[in-house]
Every structure is written in structure tokens, then in C-alpha cells.
Image 1 (tube, rainbow, N blue to C red):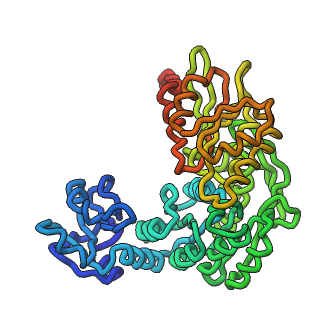
Image 2: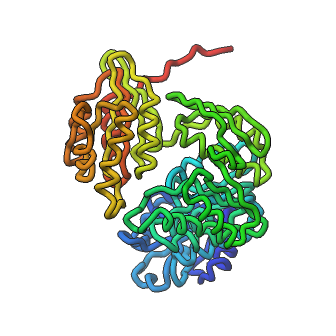
Image 3: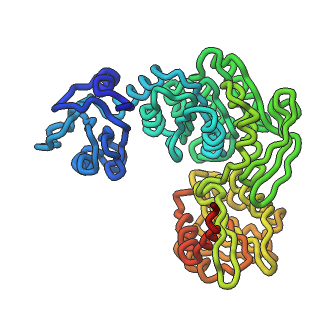
Length: 479
């Protein structure tokens, strides 16, 4: 059996104490008792809301081969009879295991942070590297104090490329994570007003993002967005952290990996890029200029870890937008269809503008409308009123005349829009959901964008349930 970890290696890495008859090894690592796989180790992490120790029995019932539990919680497990590794603290033990995974791996490691585009860039890297080797990458947005060590602990020893997303809400959160990951290449996609309620300025956000450079290995690389107003700050921080090589991407003429020209369409885009002295025409399966710009960072990282840039560039043609990050759905409405653009995963002023641009570039069917369905941007702090009202300009410039809003903060945008714009405002997402279900029509292009915590994804789910996507046509069998 090709174990992810042998029990003896788990014990050594985590400085654990065995209880019961341990299996020879485990096939995976899980912190969710509901989805733990047969033969996996279940780590009973105590979170802010739930304690994994309370679900140890369920994890065993669902196939866990081994429990990792805290010494202090052992008496509370009562008569539970199961193979266990007992540790001082389960999260700290998982961090030690993650560090051991990094120590044993010869993989080339890429780490991604930024205010906007982290997950999309990570997924692009996964997509273009999979044809070139064994890739291990973060699941979903596992980018915090437990998501990063969990992703590391799950990394097989025989990995060629590791891709990690690292996020933060406050200063000093990226620093310990990047020192676990120890990337060969660290990418900063952008600096924008995300989590602005926890910072006094964009420069402070940039300083927090720049912590990623402190983990870069000797001889490693930094890849920085040259179009960012904080580029010089980031460049200086990378140098101060001892990063050996600093590269840039963007539209800026001085960028090493430069976007020369961009042609966008509703279902994809074409860009012409100057990459280290050569020009390439690249097709991307996902729409949006912001996707194209981050593709430059992806190709830079591919080159810097020694993978095939041409192969990676051709792979971008089959790249699709992720769920909640621009994924498109064609939904049956009466005799026709509407296009639903799902941007419901998260939002800040920069990503809002990118989503509005996506809607602008989408053409409704005859008689249809471009409809922006917008929910509150959270974590804006004292800037909340200002940043919501400021969306009026981009919407008017894009020619969006049908705007549906939900949430107390979006009342500021409602009040800032000119009278010629058709505005529907509801205080709650539930109320707007009810309205939307009866108001959409064939030919419409509906874009839904909000912070995840608003629950605007409920509108997405409701529309898909009420107006199913057309069934794929079956092709005739071939000999």
C-alpha cells in the first residue's frame, strides 16, 4: 500500500503518543468527520465554533482508521475504543506534520497571495501544471492558519509541483504560513481594499501581503504586479526579505511579463504577451481582463519552476471560471435562455469593478437586459459608505441600467445612482431572491456579486433550481 503517511512517521513528525493498535499507515488527512475517507486519519481540531473531539465517533463510523486527539481531551472521549495518536495540541501537531511534509518533498513550491485573484491564480497554476507533473494544490480557499498546514500535511512525498494559497485578514498572519510553505516562487497578485476595516491604508495591506517573501527559499523568486500602486513597496520588501530574484507582471512597460494587447469576449479572451523577450498569443477559456493579467503571473511562475511555458500557455485555452468566481450558466426561461454569471464568492471594490466589466462585455439576447445583482461588501470598516457609493461611477460608465441591490450597505449605492438607472433595492437577500425569481426573463444577462458572508449565493442557487440548465444533447454513438 502506498500510504500518505506511515503511523511511525506520523508519530515522529508530531511527537505523538500511540494508543491502541495503530494501522501501518493512513491514506489521507481529514478534519471533517462528515467527509473523512476510509483509511484516513481524523485530526480532532478545536475550532471557534466546534470541537472535533465531539465528532470522533462519527469520524470512526465514516471510515477513519486513526484519530489524532489532544491529551487534555482524552478523558472526555470516554470508552471510545480506537487507534489514536495523542498530542499536546491537535492544530500544533498538524502544523508540525505539515512542516515534515515540506521537509521530505523535492517539489517546486509556488505560493500565491493578494487582495484579489488568489484562488483563480492558484487554480490556473493547477490547471496548467497538471499535464506536466504530479501537482498538489490547496483545496477551495484553504489559505488560513489551519488550511495551509492541512494542505501541506496532505502533500504526497512524490509531488512535482506544490501550489499554495496564503491569505490574511490582519498583519502577521501570512508570516508563519509562508515559513511553513517555504516557496520557490511567491506571487502577489494585487493590492486592493479588501479587509480595509482592519487596516488604515492600502500600504498597510501591502506590507501584510509582503510577509509572503519572508518564507521564500534561498535562490527563490518574487513575482509582483507592476501595475499596483504599491509595487515599489512590495519590491523593496522582497529585497529586504532576501529574495534572490524579483520579477514583475502587468501592463506597465517595465514589466518583465507584460500584457501587450487584450481582446475580451463573453466566454473567454485572447491576449498578446511579452514574456521574457518573446511575444506570445494566448487564448484563455475564462473571460475577464483580470484573469488575463493574472495569467501572466502564472506563466512567470511556470517558467521560474522550470516547467514548459508553451505547454502551459496552450493549456489556458481550456481554463474555465470557478464556481462563484465568474462561472456562467445558461438557464431555460420560457421559450429562451438567460445567462447567469456567478460572482457570489466574495467582493471588494476592485473585484466589483472587474465583475462589472465582465457584465459590460456580455451581450444580452434581443430584448434582454444586463442586470447587476449586488450585495454588500463586508469588512470595509469606516470606508463602507464611501466604497459602496463609489460603485455608481463604474456601473454608469459600463452602461448598466438595471441594478438590483440587497443589504444595508448597498443602500449607499442606491442613493448614489442617477435617476435614469432602474434600481431595485431590498433590505435582505431573501427579499431580493424572491423578487429575482419572478423578474428575470429570457435574453437577460444576470451577474450576481457580493461578499460571501451576505449569502447572495442563495440567489444563484434559487435561479438554477427554478430555471434549470438545458440538458446536454446526446450525440449518436460512433463505431
